[in-house]
Image: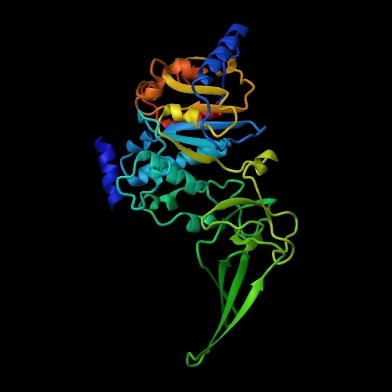
Length: 391
């Protein structure tokens, strides 16, 4: 508790399944059917995908053990980088709340950063690091929890494209209100204001000539209609020029856009918005999604994938010890690997009212001790995460 208070004060300023006998496989299938009767996914926005996914679940309480805001930021950065290196598709940050109320929106509404929970802090850092650099300023307002993110090494994920790089897809963001772009061309300053008026995109070009002698100014204003044959939104794609897309977006929305092969940003029809899963379906890694779960049962219940997680692995020092050479990865659609906090996954299950009468062996297909005969009483979650996924 002392370490958590110290950090809050400063703020104010995967691989595996037992490849054993057929009876074990039948037992796992029977156990999975029994729990699915109780834990059917409740998320309305269920994703249907044929591409296998890997999800990791980590407790927000690991942040509370950090001694300072800088160390907490570095810890979150380690998790983000490990998830990117090993191509994790989803990170679930869960709390140990007994009730299952959905507070995913509420925990992110603390704009000041004062007394922000460990889960909210971790989610904010993970989302920030996963976002392409050219979108961060518009999607993330200044926040005290982001003070030290500049010290973290970049994830350098495939969708974090440089300005000179061309790719089939790019992440884009819509402008927040009137967006100002300043360009210096010789002695003329061109300021373009982009504004959505119904379904009509209007640009106001203001040219201001600056005299090199006495500072005398003269200005002229012209109105120009931007119309490429369809409604759309002017967005930042991280290139030298902004482009028009084929949908009208609310400010602050991030989407994936198909850039195609036409590199002329001034010509052609608006670029097409596609599902964020499209790059993955073509074999590209496109970052991870982040979501919040109020408790361990919500990790399973609110799974965004159709059919839920069909194989679940829990990690603990009390788990089974199996040599990596004896483990075989089962055929899965959506794999979940869960990590416990300071007191382990056992405490998370015991404190969850939705899991009364159940233990970790009832809710996980495999419960492993991935670091047997450990010399330390505890192993930090960020370190355990790297080792488990690597194995």
